[in-house]
Image 1 (cartoon, rainbow, N blue to C red):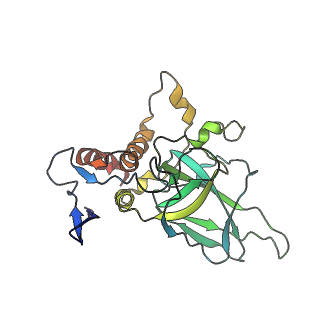
Image 2: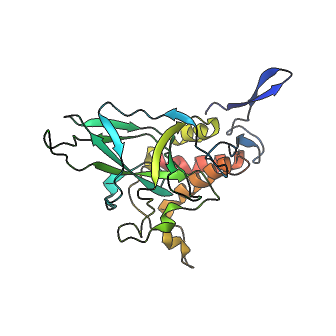
Length: 260
């Protein structure tokens, strides 16, 4: 289904390719079919700045910070296919035409404040229409602000929404003005999971959830939320655990089928 040749081991002065099992072939459920990647900077429990390719913005478009802009819960402003938390992203378009901005799957949003809080991963490519930001030559209109739905890259670190006390954010999983969009990951294990998720456009975010609800004693995960929890758990097995097993991979593929 996807290429699973990964990793390089050095022996006798030569590099030897290590081939992991095909996750959909017959075999033991506990076989590791996507390798762990927890020793990479900014991933898992490892500190540092994540590595990857630079995200290239179209000419005339820039990303700016809007710390005082209230969170807007309009679902049409949600982009992505995971909702463990959101990061706000504000664009200024200096051109006089609307520009389509592609935000690539694999983009890492890094927590930019102090403390051990999750970094985020965009799990699908999204395209955002950014109209001109200037009413005329001298008058600037508002930014185009959207919210990226992200998966977490660090199981042992805090969630950004745990700090939310403001009227506009307290009931949503938003890390408002807490994140900086950085690089697009080139990590082969994470890319492997993203390749799988590309085949399921039905994961597109259409509604919000209140993360505090999960603290209620009688809380049960809503049916629509189950698949996002499975994807997050699979990613954490890669970033913080021993890797993704064949059994977990198969169960994820089966659960994803309605979203194709």
